[in-house]
Length: 277
Ligand SMILES: NC(=O)c1ccc[n+]([C@@H]2O[C@H](COP(=O)([O-])OP(=O)(O)OC[C@H]3O[C@@H](n4cnc5c(N)ncnc54)[C@H](OP(=O)(O)O)[C@@H]3O)[C@@H](O)[C@H]2O)c1
Image (tube, rainbow, N blue to C red; front, side, top):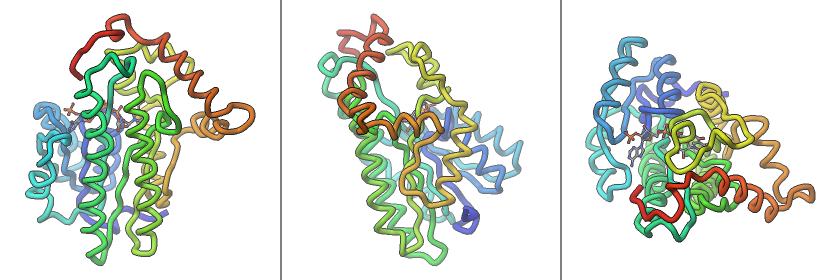
């Protein structure tokens, strides 16, 4: 396993103020990385930065940015171009759960922008930058077990995560010889606000117990240190993922099973409501 510190002094984390991103930020700060944290809410950025500076005596810079905005990269690079960024964690993500036709098109497009387009933009910028410098760098993208096949009532989110998995796997192979690390991490249900306080569905009622964020963050960082192209987090999630496509659980059966589970978990307010995200 590679010591990530060999890549640089600084780590950039989008979505570093909550859930898995916050846990990864804490672990990188504990290893001595200075951090650039990106999320939309300035107050949450300040809360996290203050705690990390106090606990780990590292430098933390923040930028309130929406990564679905077309010009987000130019705002971000004005902050990161002068820093020795060695690790990038593209963790900002999320989506809504509902019948596909019950949500306005704008929601579906926003889910693609947040999860897929922003990953392409960050990967393209930092992979090129890392390729052109001697100490290279490492980039972590976020897929999901929901990207392993289509998930009814989460159709666009699962499509976006499938795109991220394919993107990272492909670019990992392209950059392997250049020494630039690219790993897609696919967690299953994890105890973050996205799951515990999901406004669309009672995800805590699903038969799979969410993993703790700390365990997910630790496993994700190990996968990056090994430059794994794609890592499904958690033994149970890997077991379930490996069953799909086999005789015991066909892809179609798994789509049907997850569709039935999510349909049951949807909150009444989610169904038929043309709500913004
Ligand atoms: N939790 C799970 O069960 C699970 C399972 C599989 C995959 N994942 C993936 O893992 C990643 C982290 O998930 P999580 O559950 O830890 O998320 P979370 O707790 O909901 O946190 C999301 C983070 O992303 C930021 N963010 C959201 N939209 C943004 C935007 N448009 N621009 C910039 N920042 C934005 C949020 O801050 P602001 O709101 O202030 O912007 C927050 O810091 C995501 O990519 C998610 O899809 C999660």
